[in-house]
Length: 429
Image (cartoon, rainbow, N blue to C red; front, side):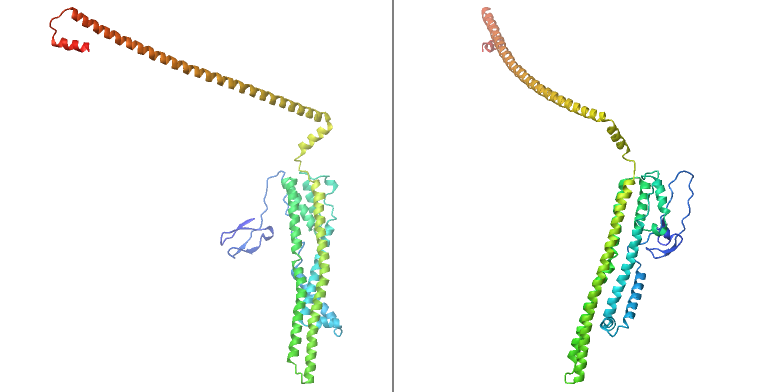
């Protein structure tokens, strides 16, 4: 649900558990009231039921405050039990070696308390695997028509067993299948949820691994402190005074006792803590593997999204009618034969077309060459004829002029005018 802050106008995404409460805006740190969710009225008709689920607890991490109180109470109890044994070596190790041993004991008891609480959580997860979440009365497979019944069956289980990793994972997977009706999306969701649960389980052991590292480190710190006290007492002692020398020796042995006892206690407690830590972690990994196997082997095979119904029907018909398979094989063989024949015909036709194209090209080249030669010959003949005719024309003109000159001489003109002489001289030329 989106709610707008009245102070900075920031849109906030509010979860259902905050409805009706007053919260602080993360942007401006102002206080705002989250309204209650109003029930929506819808028109009558077939609708998908609205399921709100339930509040899920952390199935990997224990309550920090509760485990801390258990650790404090257990440490006080162990120290009280050691008071009667203060005179022997065991009681002295816990009570007379300073704060380092107290801290080692506290971390050890706190870690054991966390392991016990995780063991109980893991036992609860193992009990939930015994639930019958897919009763036969609801159907042998889960499809879009009956998935709602399987989800309602999960909602009807007791809350103490309903709030478990396996039940929550299956419930979310079925609700996703009801919404999407897709086996692939459900398988991807289950794989992602498995990785999330495994990472959460691994990270829940971080504090215990810190304890396992810190306990021997505290022992080494106590060793250094004890040696420091021993060396300083020996260096500051008065060797001339027997009483002072005796006190220095006592201080030296006390410092060495603190040094060795703190390291001894730290190593023993870290070793004792590593065994139950490995056992609880192994048991939790086995439970997660069992849940993954149940979802993969029991849930996914029951889901039917009806996407391959047509293919399944075709396969059944092919198996029931063997002649169909044989006819398909024969048709395929005939198709391949016809395809080979068509390919061969196309290849032969291409070769014929190529041959004809080459011959046509030769004819065109020959015709063009002949035409050019004829054009050249015709042009030469025309030029020669024109030259001959032109020569004949000039010859006729010259003969005509000679005839004119003879005619003029025959007339016997005694005096030819100057203009006529000029013309005659011109023609004579």
